[in-house]
Length: 208
Image (cartoon, rainbow, N blue to C red; front, side, top):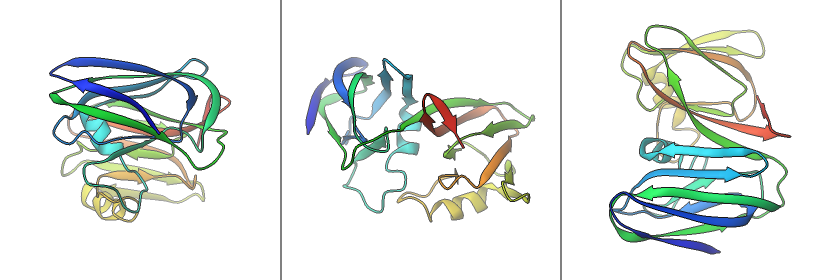
């Protein structure tokens, strides 16, 4: 269902309400990339807060195929009715952007997607996440992954790029923990940069 059309324009904010949390928020910005996108649930707080890099990194995660230029952001494990939702953001150029809301089942859990800072030359630890996106890691940076079964592996950037291709349509530097077999990840980067973390909220609490 089409929920809203942002008129577009350079640095032009938009905002619209929803009375339910959709499973997917879908839009096709084409030449008008969003500068930011935020989804706020009156009960769970801000559940999605991304810049342009984050949108392009998380879009279409785990989708087998997508429409050209389309962005599908997952917000829940199904449609959650009776919610007070506000979707807001900022457009970057002229041209309308249509937003669609959809889902094919009744939902119970919210998906949270947020930015996180990675410190330079200091292990940054991530736990209780469904997917960890590292779009800005450089050659030589690495992730130390502790698995639930007790073993540990060190992943270089090139390994993450190859493995990521198994899980989504666009290859990236992604650590997929949808099946909850990772206990924690330590990311070590030579320079400070930004990670994006997707997690499942059950009763407002992130789950691993």
